[in-house]
Length: 371
Ligand SMILES: [Zn+2]
Image (cartoon, rainbow, N blue to C red; front, side, top):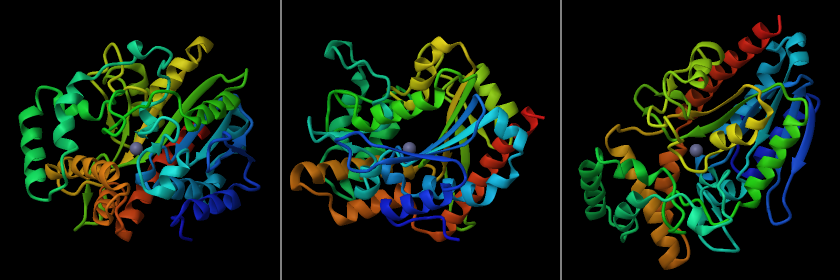
């Protein structure tokens, strides 16, 4: 069976068909949202495990495909006892608009700008002066948003990266910013309907009785794709340092067969602003229960040096096109897609093999913990 889809409608149809009978299906949609979020809860336990997909539209249908594979091939591996102890919930494609429009972000119809949902979670937008700052982003903005040009711009970004790799400016580009609506990794000026909807889903999952929460988001774009060998990397990205208990839980207990990438800079505060995993940890802190969150990343970059340059250039070019011509140039679009969701069928197969490793780890944990 082909788990991948070509568009949101096909993906949702596949998900609903696979989820039907497996558990309790629900659909969520704020009035202003064009695409609903489907959700299936399997099992009845108070220990919640959530796997979400599609926060970033440009990452295509990998997350959806992985969830479909889980539903059709892997469910029988979960023991009955495990389904008494745990509820496993799949949230399907949070950013349907981005999926259909092949952008990472959601277009904010009300305020303008392209908003990265994963920089918009849990931010206090009530007072503009309280918004997190990211002055280093401003240094990179002009070169990223400069006129698309395959040779000159690429060289300029490459040089910029070399110059600013050690002073934190390059890294700051992706951390999130709240003042350039068409800049990269913009977090918006209010909580978007997609994110309110996501919070409502999580609140419903947690209810009053949740004893623990494990949440994993499915993503692509970080890591490598070795085209010749048709192999990809996969990692579990935790937003905590190496020795933090959450990092150790993923490393030793939940996903021992997936390499863990800790964030050693996140000692006192998270590095990424407004991302879902930190938002969840804060939101349910008052419950005083174990909460473990992370993102699963499948690699797409072919060249370890140039891939970050191309990715940032493609993102900047797409914005330049939008601002100046009202639409994204076809070539820019194709490059952007290829950077985050390779068309190569062998990439797609390899990505699912890695998702299978992740899911097998999670299922083993469930079965062991409920024996
Ligand atoms: Zn992503």
